[in-house]
Image (cartoon, rainbow, N blue to C red; front, side, top):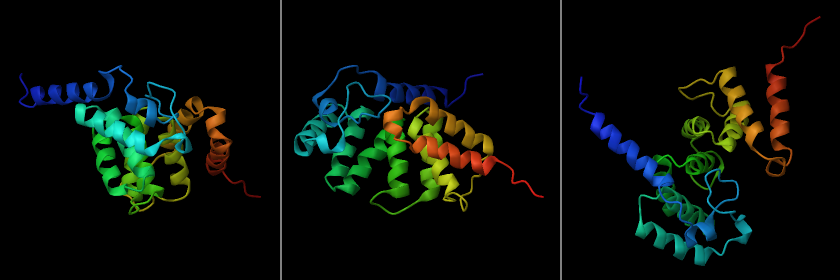
Length: 202
């Protein structure tokens, strides 16, 4: 039986796929604004202190103007704007990229809502980290576990199971490099294991 919403669903999925997979071209925006830990990066990437913010902003505004559906460019523009203290405009572009399903944007939006320069929203951040885990974004897994262990999601409508946290932890362990981790993932595993270990009584 034909489903009325099937055509619309197919169109949406096609748009989302196009948004961050269709173009293999490395743009000037990519070269100037890619994050080195972005799992979907198409070039090596730059740390924050290495970015020429003015040049990157110009290049990424041009990239977004040329193709506003390209979620990677929307994310890169958001990154540059955030570092330039243009937080509200940054969040606008970040939400576009996250809504399009770009994993790094999903994670970063969650990170900013949890610990960034905007109104804190732990529950929404947790939802984004969960979505990031579903998209196999390693740092989403790490932050989901960290914030859960810190009790940041206790008042949220959703409840995380031990299985949810273990899955997220393993994603981080398997894909975050030792260099990028700098011991953080290992400490997080120790915290999670300590929480999971029953306390013996005499």
